Image (cartoon, rainbow, N blue to C red; front, side):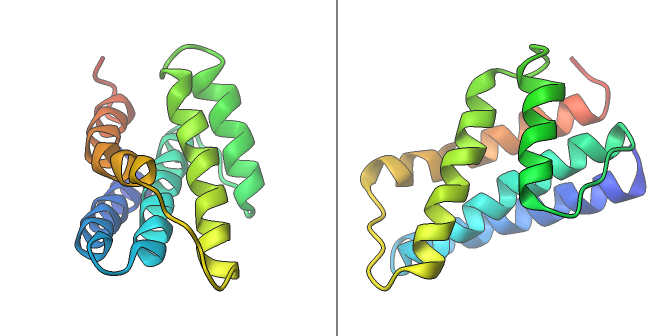
Length: 125
C-alpha cells in the first residue's frame, strides 16, 4: 500500500469516528464528516492507481469509472459517495439542513465501506 493511501484511509476512519460522535447532536456536521470519509476512501483507491485529482468532481467521476463501472466495487458505493456529497453541500450551505433517518443509516454503514475499500486498496479480494 502506498503511503498516501494509508494516510487517506486513516483520515477516512477518523472522519467516520467524528461523524458517529456528531450524529446525536450535530447532524449537519456529521453528514459532512461522513461525506469526507467516503471521499478520502475514493481518493485512496485512486491513489493506488496513481490517479490524483484536484476537484471533488474529478474524484467522483474517476471513482465511478475505475471501480463502479468495472465491477471492482458495487456501484452502490459510487451512488453513496454522490448522495453524501449532496448532503454535505446541503449541510454546509443551507441554514436549515434536513438530515433524515436514512442519512443516519448511511452514516452507520460507513465503517463497513471503509473496511471493504481498505481491503481492496491493499490488493485483497
